[in-house]
Length: 142
Image (tube, rainbow, N blue to C red; front, side, top):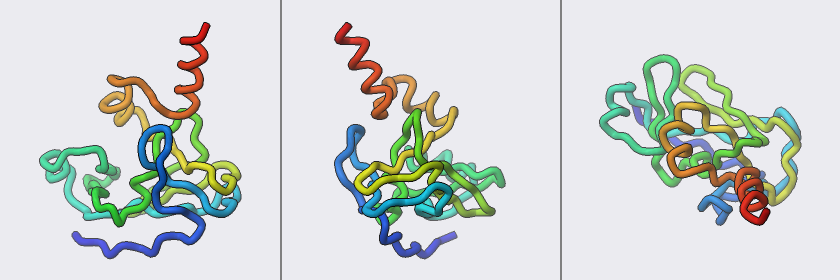
């Protein structure tokens, strides 16, 4: 199922370099518990998603997966963090990011990718999120 892309919220900057590559950053203050952005893409069955593979698959609980690989899906640039400032909320076939705390201008919008993604992609290489990088740097200098 093809999905026409929603307009990019004006309070976000598309992509910028972050500690882990590209990131999604607030241009303006985003208050706590506010809609930030929708994660969108083509909707496929979980079986089709297995054949596609990759890191930009968002598995829903209804046997469907959102393939968010298109660069027009600005939400794909929201990185993982062990100390997130946003969370995922799912409604039907839609995935939304909401702020869990106030996000300041120029602050990166980050959320926890979850245990399954963590085990498959992050754990083998080590977490590169800002809090973990600071913790590892501190460990290495002691």
